[in-house]
Length: 232
Image (cartoon, rainbow, N blue to C red; front, side):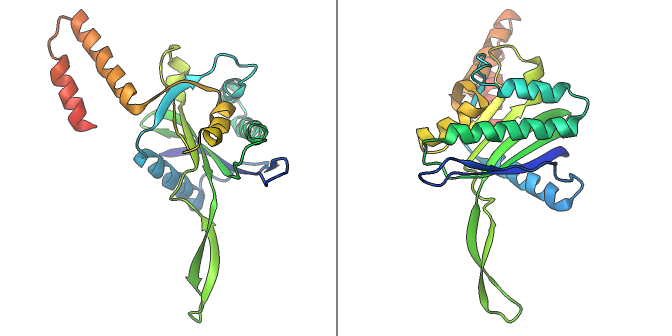
């Protein structure tokens, strides 16, 4: 994985108050091994999550401006400052969407990376967790650490696919929370639409394969589907 940019912001939402944000003004240095470790850990957890949902961006960009912000970032020559602007605007929108919900917020991690010539943008919400550790004298002390085992909300944009996508192509994948209210604020921030599960996405790929084979007078669609099923 080639890490291009990574930044972390924070949004909090205490009961009975307006959501608050703590925004970084600069990206974290991608050459820092701790930064690379964080991105690698989050990506690995995301990959292992089953039952992802797939979709694209809502065409009503006045109501859902994230796609416009992403476009602006991708076309700017000053990528570092444009990345910060994109992420700050997104977290401010996220805080607005959280108003009136029971969502607690957390750390919002954005990272732009390249893998196998494909470019991606990941957006992940993580939280702290309490734990225990031993000090030098082997006394037990409390410790607060990032909870990297649980992604409360996460989404990934396949930038390469997005830039060349048709309206029906799925370039946005995400993990849904258990509560429809809680996951709604996250999806509305990104303006995700036309969502469906991984099963439907796989079936759609097989249907498209069948259509191609029919046009080419090939009878290998069933065999190829079986091969893909064994590989998934």
